[in-house]
Length: 431
Image (tube, rainbow, N blue to C red; front, side, top):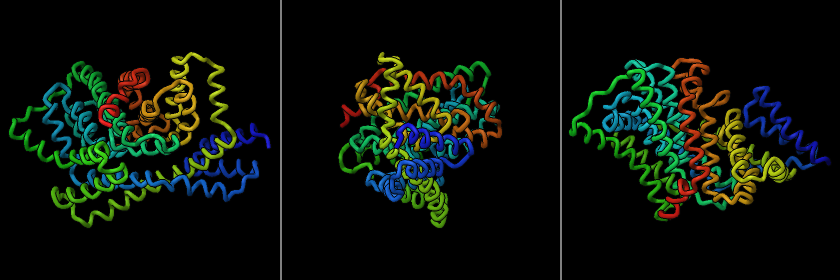
């Protein structure tokens, strides 16, 4: 069979189905079926790839992380994190916007999801900011871009997906640590345009809290933030694997939410489980479908063809890495993060790690940061869509407001790309 025609069928049918607005999971699966039929590959092999794609012990961490994040987001942790962030930084000019960024930094260490961050923190802070005199588009822009910290600051189930897509030889614990400095750095960078715009537009300050109230808010937020210590401490010390730490975090979140905070009744656990199951079904079905798609890409030797194609454009390593970043940024605007990680990792891994000599941890963080920026960009930026829905503004209006924040996000990306210590220093020191 003609490999070129097989490649055309695989990629062409996938793009065509996406343009027809088929869900990504079905687009990946159907294009895999079409290609397998043309190549005379038994369809049972495709089904087996679907199953083997999710038959991994490390992937067990994903449902536990999703569940613990869902429990904490509905159990009052968002409000407590916002209160604590307000006590720390709310007194500066444009304080609520800075609180938004800091609260997203804290919440990202619990949920590991940008969309969950926007849904939880944004639902609270966007209306609050608008009522306090902030422009709606600015409020949405701050919320959406700061939520990207959630996919970098551990725990991030996207890092688990990357470790699996990279062949299982990449340490999830090191990936978690590798994303910490870029994630916190992203938040600090976002505070710069936020402060400039706040002073320029005369946004209000919050009333400073006294020491007594600040300590009370810190105490209330501590139990939620301790989830991060459980996950990271367990993984770094070797007491837990990433999967075991996720399970412990889910149990801890349950105890804290229902027996310490006690803001919601135990019967609320059923809707929480339902929401978690819905999210899990979407994530795991994407992983399964993308696995069959990735199998056919390997069969057709598409990764090798892409490697050769990139090297024919330029052999300059700096130009090549910039070209890869640009390609990932563009792909992130039209496709969701999880399938892109599974599809692009085996294609780019030989180029970036093999030819360019980049450490797999650095590559993983760079890849995820690129795709995180895609979550804030039209036409498929899921975090942007959620933020616009909460703020009741159009995608076009929000995109214009996000432009100054894109600049500092790309700055963080370039630092991750060209300064290995950004991602490798903590893993080397701690593990």
